[in-house]
View (cartoon, rainbow, N blue to C red):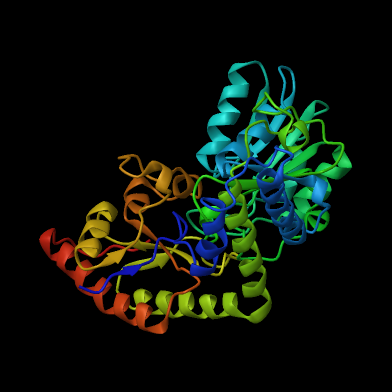
Length: 384
Protein backbone atom coordinates (compact mmCIF):
# COMPACT_ATOMS: atom_id res chain seq x y z
CA UNK A 1 0.00 0.00 0.00
CA UNK A 2 1.26 3.44 -0.87
CA UNK A 3 1.58 5.68 2.19
CA UNK A 4 1.48 9.49 2.14
CA UNK A 5 2.52 11.39 5.25
CA UNK A 6 0.75 14.74 5.76
CA UNK A 7 1.41 15.45 9.43
CA UNK A 8 4.61 17.48 9.18
CA UNK A 9 3.48 19.78 11.99
CA UNK A 10 3.72 16.80 14.34
CA UNK A 11 7.21 15.83 13.21
CA UNK A 12 9.34 15.46 10.10
CA UNK A 13 11.77 12.75 8.98
CA UNK A 14 15.50 13.39 8.97
CA UNK A 15 16.74 14.49 5.59
CA UNK A 16 19.63 12.30 4.36
CA UNK A 17 22.00 15.28 4.48
CA UNK A 18 21.15 15.82 8.14
CA UNK A 19 21.74 12.18 9.01
CA UNK A 20 25.11 12.15 7.26
CA UNK A 21 26.17 15.33 9.06
CA UNK A 22 25.28 13.77 12.44
CA UNK A 23 26.79 10.31 11.85
CA UNK A 24 30.45 11.03 12.80
CA UNK A 25 29.49 12.57 16.14
CA UNK A 26 28.02 9.34 17.46
CA UNK A 27 31.11 7.25 16.76
CA UNK A 28 34.36 8.85 15.53
CA UNK A 29 33.96 12.29 17.12
CA UNK A 30 32.21 11.26 20.34
CA UNK A 31 33.99 13.70 22.69
CA UNK A 32 32.45 15.94 25.33
CA UNK A 33 32.47 19.48 23.99
CA UNK A 34 33.63 20.77 27.39
CA UNK A 35 36.86 18.69 27.34
CA UNK A 36 40.14 20.36 26.32
CA UNK A 37 41.81 17.40 24.59
CA UNK A 38 41.44 16.51 20.90
CA UNK A 39 38.12 14.61 21.00
CA UNK A 40 36.54 17.36 23.06
CA UNK A 41 37.80 20.11 20.79
CA UNK A 42 36.47 18.29 17.73
CA UNK A 43 33.05 18.28 19.37
CA UNK A 44 33.39 21.93 20.40
CA UNK A 45 34.18 22.99 16.83
CA UNK A 46 31.09 21.16 15.60
CA UNK A 47 28.90 22.92 18.17
CA UNK A 48 30.45 26.27 17.27
CA UNK A 49 29.79 25.71 13.55
CA UNK A 50 26.16 24.88 14.30
CA UNK A 51 25.89 28.01 16.44
CA UNK A 52 27.16 30.10 13.52
CA UNK A 53 24.47 28.59 11.30
CA UNK A 54 21.71 29.23 13.85
CA UNK A 55 22.90 32.81 14.26
CA UNK A 56 22.46 33.27 10.52
CA UNK A 57 19.07 31.55 10.71
CA UNK A 58 17.87 33.89 13.47
CA UNK A 59 19.84 36.91 12.17
CA UNK A 60 21.51 37.44 15.54
CA UNK A 61 24.91 37.25 17.22
CA UNK A 62 26.36 33.80 17.87
CA UNK A 63 26.47 34.57 21.59
CA UNK A 64 22.67 34.93 21.55
CA UNK A 65 22.05 31.29 20.46
CA UNK A 66 21.31 28.79 23.24
CA UNK A 67 20.96 25.09 22.46
CA UNK A 68 18.41 23.08 24.43
CA UNK A 69 16.13 20.04 24.16
CA UNK A 70 13.42 21.59 21.98
CA UNK A 71 10.42 23.86 21.83
CA UNK A 72 8.85 22.90 25.15
CA UNK A 73 12.02 23.68 27.05
CA UNK A 74 12.41 26.96 25.18
CA UNK A 75 8.84 28.04 25.93
CA UNK A 76 9.15 27.00 29.57
CA UNK A 77 12.47 28.84 29.92
CA UNK A 78 10.97 32.07 28.62
CA UNK A 79 8.06 31.99 31.06
CA UNK A 80 9.63 30.46 34.18
CA UNK A 81 12.85 32.37 33.59
CA UNK A 82 11.22 35.81 33.52
CA UNK A 83 7.84 35.83 35.25
CA UNK A 84 7.81 36.19 39.06
CA UNK A 85 4.98 36.49 41.62
CA UNK A 86 3.37 39.89 41.14
CA UNK A 87 4.42 40.12 37.48
CA UNK A 88 1.91 40.21 34.64
CA UNK A 89 2.12 37.81 31.66
CA UNK A 90 0.16 38.32 28.45
CA UNK A 91 -0.27 35.36 26.12
CA UNK A 92 -3.05 33.99 23.92
CA UNK A 93 -5.66 31.29 24.25
CA UNK A 94 -4.40 29.53 21.09
CA UNK A 95 -0.82 28.88 22.20
CA UNK A 96 0.80 25.47 22.36
CA UNK A 97 0.33 23.66 25.66
CA UNK A 98 4.02 24.28 26.46
CA UNK A 99 3.08 27.94 26.89
CA UNK A 100 -0.44 27.50 28.26
CA UNK A 101 0.52 25.06 31.02
CA UNK A 102 3.55 27.17 31.97
CA UNK A 103 1.32 30.25 32.14
CA UNK A 104 -1.10 28.41 34.42
CA UNK A 105 1.81 27.35 36.64
CA UNK A 106 3.14 30.90 37.13
CA UNK A 107 -0.41 32.04 37.85
CA UNK A 108 -0.57 29.45 40.63
CA UNK A 109 2.64 30.94 42.00
CA UNK A 110 1.24 34.46 42.20
CA UNK A 111 1.66 36.02 38.77
CA UNK A 112 -1.17 37.67 36.85
CA UNK A 113 -1.93 36.11 33.46
CA UNK A 114 -4.09 37.45 30.64
CA UNK A 115 -5.11 35.09 27.83
CA UNK A 116 -5.99 37.03 24.65
CA UNK A 117 -8.61 35.35 22.42
CA UNK A 118 -8.20 35.27 18.64
CA UNK A 119 -10.50 36.71 16.04
CA UNK A 120 -12.67 34.18 14.16
CA UNK A 121 -9.99 33.78 11.49
CA UNK A 122 -7.44 32.80 14.14
CA UNK A 123 -5.52 36.07 14.12
CA UNK A 124 -4.61 37.92 17.30
CA UNK A 125 -5.42 41.63 17.14
CA UNK A 126 -2.32 43.51 18.35
CA UNK A 127 -4.49 46.27 19.76
CA UNK A 128 -6.12 43.76 22.09
CA UNK A 129 -2.69 43.04 23.50
CA UNK A 130 -2.02 46.77 23.83
CA UNK A 131 -5.27 47.10 25.75
CA UNK A 132 -4.25 44.32 28.14
CA UNK A 133 -0.98 45.99 29.18
CA UNK A 134 -0.48 46.82 32.84
CA UNK A 135 2.31 48.64 34.67
CA UNK A 136 3.61 45.26 35.88
CA UNK A 137 3.50 43.51 32.50
CA UNK A 138 6.74 41.57 32.41
CA UNK A 139 6.37 39.31 29.39
CA UNK A 140 4.28 38.94 26.25
CA UNK A 141 4.41 35.48 24.65
CA UNK A 142 2.82 34.88 21.23
CA UNK A 143 3.45 32.11 18.70
CA UNK A 144 4.60 32.88 15.17
CA UNK A 145 2.58 30.18 13.37
CA UNK A 146 -0.25 28.27 14.97
CA UNK A 147 0.48 24.55 15.06
CA UNK A 148 -3.11 23.57 14.21
CA UNK A 149 -4.26 26.15 11.65
CA UNK A 150 -0.95 27.52 10.40
CA UNK A 151 -2.21 31.09 10.93
CA UNK A 152 0.73 33.51 11.08
CA UNK A 153 0.46 36.02 13.90
CA UNK A 154 1.41 39.72 13.54
CA UNK A 155 4.52 39.38 15.67
CA UNK A 156 6.19 42.50 14.26
CA UNK A 157 3.35 44.72 15.47
CA UNK A 158 3.19 42.89 18.80
CA UNK A 159 6.95 43.28 19.21
CA UNK A 160 6.64 47.04 18.77
CA UNK A 161 3.91 47.15 21.41
CA UNK A 162 6.13 45.24 23.83
CA UNK A 163 9.05 47.53 23.04
CA UNK A 164 7.01 50.66 23.72
CA UNK A 165 5.71 49.18 26.98
CA UNK A 166 9.12 48.07 28.21
CA UNK A 167 7.99 44.43 28.39
CA UNK A 168 9.93 41.40 27.24
CA UNK A 169 8.62 39.59 24.17
CA UNK A 170 8.88 35.83 23.51
CA UNK A 171 7.94 34.11 20.26
CA UNK A 172 7.20 30.39 20.03
CA UNK A 173 8.47 29.92 16.48
CA UNK A 174 8.45 26.13 16.47
CA UNK A 175 5.92 25.92 13.60
CA UNK A 176 7.23 28.97 11.76
CA UNK A 177 10.80 27.70 11.52
CA UNK A 178 11.77 26.96 7.94
CA UNK A 179 8.42 28.21 6.62
CA UNK A 180 8.94 31.97 6.91
CA UNK A 181 12.19 33.99 6.97
CA UNK A 182 13.37 34.81 10.48
CA UNK A 183 14.68 38.15 11.64
CA UNK A 184 14.65 38.59 15.38
CA UNK A 185 15.59 42.26 15.11
CA UNK A 186 12.54 42.90 12.94
CA UNK A 187 10.38 41.06 15.48
CA UNK A 188 11.82 43.16 18.35
CA UNK A 189 11.75 40.01 20.49
CA UNK A 190 13.90 39.11 23.48
CA UNK A 191 13.47 35.35 23.14
CA UNK A 192 12.46 32.97 20.38
CA UNK A 193 12.14 29.16 20.49
CA UNK A 194 12.52 26.52 17.78
CA UNK A 195 12.66 22.71 17.63
CA UNK A 196 14.81 20.66 15.24
CA UNK A 197 12.34 17.88 14.51
CA UNK A 198 9.88 20.28 12.88
CA UNK A 199 12.46 21.18 10.19
CA UNK A 200 13.71 17.72 9.21
CA UNK A 201 16.20 17.61 12.07
CA UNK A 202 16.46 15.17 15.00
CA UNK A 203 14.07 14.93 17.92
CA UNK A 204 15.17 16.07 21.37
CA UNK A 205 17.13 19.17 20.39
CA UNK A 206 16.23 22.79 19.77
CA UNK A 207 17.54 26.30 20.14
CA UNK A 208 16.57 29.66 21.56
CA UNK A 209 17.47 33.16 20.61
CA UNK A 210 18.12 35.08 23.83
CA UNK A 211 18.86 38.75 23.30
CA UNK A 212 21.99 39.91 25.07
CA UNK A 213 21.14 41.47 28.42
CA UNK A 214 17.78 39.71 28.81
CA UNK A 215 17.67 38.73 32.50
CA UNK A 216 16.21 35.25 32.02
CA UNK A 217 16.99 32.70 34.72
CA UNK A 218 18.10 29.28 33.41
CA UNK A 219 15.66 26.42 33.70
CA UNK A 220 18.53 23.93 33.91
CA UNK A 221 21.32 24.64 36.41
CA UNK A 222 24.59 22.87 37.09
CA UNK A 223 27.59 23.35 34.84
CA UNK A 224 28.63 26.41 32.88
CA UNK A 225 27.40 25.11 29.52
CA UNK A 226 25.86 27.54 27.02
CA UNK A 227 27.37 30.52 28.87
CA UNK A 228 25.56 29.39 32.03
CA UNK A 229 22.18 29.78 30.37
CA UNK A 230 21.44 26.05 30.02
CA UNK A 231 23.40 23.49 32.03
CA UNK A 232 24.00 19.97 30.74
CA UNK A 233 26.44 18.20 28.45
CA UNK A 234 25.77 19.31 24.90
CA UNK A 235 23.93 16.89 22.62
CA UNK A 236 26.60 17.19 19.94
CA UNK A 237 25.03 14.94 17.25
CA UNK A 238 21.66 16.64 17.78
CA UNK A 239 23.14 20.12 17.64
CA UNK A 240 25.02 19.24 14.45
CA UNK A 241 21.76 17.91 12.99
CA UNK A 242 19.89 21.07 13.93
CA UNK A 243 22.61 23.17 12.32
CA UNK A 244 22.39 21.22 9.08
CA UNK A 245 18.59 21.29 9.11
CA UNK A 246 18.66 25.07 9.60
CA UNK A 247 21.11 25.42 6.72
CA UNK A 248 18.81 23.42 4.44
CA UNK A 249 15.79 25.39 5.65
CA UNK A 250 17.45 28.66 4.68
CA UNK A 251 18.18 27.23 1.23
CA UNK A 252 14.52 26.21 0.86
CA UNK A 253 13.37 29.71 1.71
CA UNK A 254 15.78 31.17 -0.83
CA UNK A 255 15.27 28.78 -3.75
CA UNK A 256 11.46 28.78 -3.91
CA UNK A 257 10.91 25.35 -2.36
CA UNK A 258 8.50 26.79 0.18
CA UNK A 259 6.51 28.47 -2.57
CA UNK A 260 6.24 25.07 -4.25
CA UNK A 261 4.86 23.57 -1.03
CA UNK A 262 2.35 26.42 -0.77
CA UNK A 263 1.12 25.67 -4.29
CA UNK A 264 0.69 22.00 -3.38
CA UNK A 265 -1.20 22.96 -0.21
CA UNK A 266 -3.49 25.20 -2.26
CA UNK A 267 -4.14 22.36 -4.73
CA UNK A 268 -4.97 20.04 -1.84
CA UNK A 269 -7.36 22.60 -0.36
CA UNK A 270 -9.13 23.21 -3.64
CA UNK A 271 -9.64 19.51 -4.19
CA UNK A 272 -10.99 18.86 -0.71
CA UNK A 273 -13.26 21.90 -0.78
CA UNK A 274 -14.97 20.33 -3.78
CA UNK A 275 -16.47 17.89 -1.26
CA UNK A 276 -19.83 19.29 -0.03
CA UNK A 277 -19.94 20.44 3.59
CA UNK A 278 -16.28 21.38 3.99
CA UNK A 279 -14.52 24.60 5.01
CA UNK A 280 -11.11 26.02 5.94
CA UNK A 281 -10.44 27.03 9.53
CA UNK A 282 -8.39 30.20 9.33
CA UNK A 283 -9.46 31.03 5.78
CA UNK A 284 -8.47 34.55 4.79
CA UNK A 285 -5.66 34.85 7.34
CA UNK A 286 -1.99 34.55 6.37
CA UNK A 287 -0.88 30.98 7.00
CA UNK A 288 2.26 28.86 6.99
CA UNK A 289 2.83 27.52 3.50
CA UNK A 290 2.38 23.85 4.35
CA UNK A 291 -0.67 23.88 6.63
CA UNK A 292 -4.42 23.66 6.17
CA UNK A 293 -7.09 22.85 8.74
CA UNK A 294 -10.33 21.61 7.18
CA UNK A 295 -13.81 21.01 8.63
CA UNK A 296 -15.83 18.05 7.36
CA UNK A 297 -19.52 18.50 8.16
CA UNK A 298 -21.23 15.49 9.75
CA UNK A 299 -17.99 13.53 10.12
CA UNK A 300 -16.21 12.63 13.36
CA UNK A 301 -12.62 13.77 12.88
CA UNK A 302 -11.06 10.90 14.81
CA UNK A 303 -12.95 8.37 12.71
CA UNK A 304 -11.74 10.10 9.54
CA UNK A 305 -8.12 10.05 10.77
CA UNK A 306 -8.42 6.29 11.30
CA UNK A 307 -10.17 5.74 7.96
CA UNK A 308 -7.47 7.66 6.11
CA UNK A 309 -4.72 5.82 7.96
CA UNK A 310 -6.20 2.50 6.86
CA UNK A 311 -5.93 3.81 3.29
CA UNK A 312 -2.31 4.90 3.79
CA UNK A 313 -2.78 8.63 4.46
CA UNK A 314 -1.44 10.10 7.71
CA UNK A 315 -3.11 13.30 8.95
CA UNK A 316 -3.99 14.72 12.36
CA UNK A 317 -6.97 15.92 14.31
CA UNK A 318 -4.82 18.65 15.91
CA UNK A 319 -1.72 18.98 18.05
CA UNK A 320 0.33 15.80 18.35
CA UNK A 321 0.82 16.62 22.03
CA UNK A 322 -2.88 15.94 22.61
CA UNK A 323 -3.22 12.84 20.43
CA UNK A 324 -5.87 10.57 21.89
CA UNK A 325 -7.61 13.37 23.76
CA UNK A 326 -11.40 13.31 23.59
CA UNK A 327 -11.59 17.08 24.06
CA UNK A 328 -12.06 19.24 20.96
CA UNK A 329 -9.20 21.52 19.89
CA UNK A 330 -8.78 24.48 22.24
CA UNK A 331 -7.52 26.49 19.24
CA UNK A 332 -10.62 25.92 17.14
CA UNK A 333 -12.93 26.46 20.12
CA UNK A 334 -11.20 29.77 20.83
CA UNK A 335 -11.82 30.75 17.20
CA UNK A 336 -15.55 30.29 17.79
CA UNK A 337 -16.22 26.81 16.42
CA UNK A 338 -18.67 24.70 18.39
CA UNK A 339 -17.59 21.30 19.71
CA UNK A 340 -19.12 19.43 16.79
CA UNK A 341 -17.31 21.52 14.17
CA UNK A 342 -14.03 21.41 16.11
CA UNK A 343 -14.21 17.62 16.37
CA UNK A 344 -14.97 17.42 12.65
CA UNK A 345 -11.75 19.22 11.69
CA UNK A 346 -8.49 17.73 10.46
CA UNK A 347 -5.04 19.22 9.97
CA UNK A 348 -3.14 18.46 6.78
CA UNK A 349 0.50 19.59 6.97
CA UNK A 350 2.84 18.88 4.07
CA UNK A 351 6.49 17.96 4.20
CA UNK A 352 8.77 20.11 2.07
CA UNK A 353 9.51 16.92 0.13
CA UNK A 354 5.82 16.52 -0.79
CA UNK A 355 5.03 15.91 -4.46
CA UNK A 356 2.13 16.49 -6.83
CA UNK A 357 1.63 12.73 -6.88
CA UNK A 358 1.21 12.76 -3.09
CA UNK A 359 -1.49 15.41 -3.30
CA UNK A 360 -3.34 13.68 -6.13
CA UNK A 361 -3.25 10.38 -4.21
CA UNK A 362 -4.73 12.04 -1.12
CA UNK A 363 -7.41 13.70 -3.23
CA UNK A 364 -8.47 10.28 -4.49
CA UNK A 365 -8.65 8.84 -0.95
CA UNK A 366 -10.29 11.62 1.09
CA UNK A 367 -13.63 11.96 -0.79
CA UNK A 368 -14.18 8.21 -0.64
CA UNK A 369 -13.47 8.09 3.09
CA UNK A 370 -15.74 11.05 3.83
CA UNK A 371 -18.57 9.60 1.73
CA UNK A 372 -18.23 6.25 3.50
CA UNK A 373 -18.36 7.77 7.00
CA UNK A 374 -21.31 9.96 6.13
CA UNK A 375 -23.16 6.96 4.76
CA UNK A 376 -22.68 5.17 8.06
CA UNK A 377 -24.52 7.98 9.89
CA UNK A 378 -26.79 9.60 7.27
CA UNK A 379 -27.94 13.06 8.21
CA UNK A 380 -28.84 16.08 6.17
CA UNK A 381 -25.76 18.12 5.36
CA UNK A 382 -25.60 21.28 7.39
CA UNK A 383 -23.49 24.34 6.79
CA UNK A 384 -20.83 26.09 8.81
